Image (tube, rainbow, N blue to C red; front, side, top):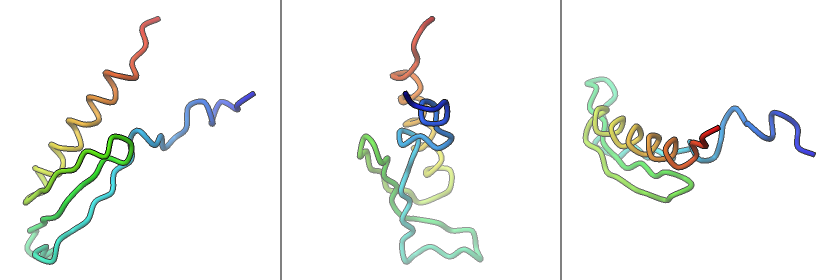
Length: 72
């Protein structure tokens, strides 16, 4: 039998992303660019700003929540 932590882990794989920052990223000026991949679905997006990065992640996390939501 799985422990409560194994059943409901703090860091679920369905909520994991890999973020790779490109050479054009300049942290001092706040310019970030690169690519992000959702680990489970393997959806990939390129981003040119923090807003674009966050928009992709939020969209995917909403999809995850919709597909894993189980009515009582």
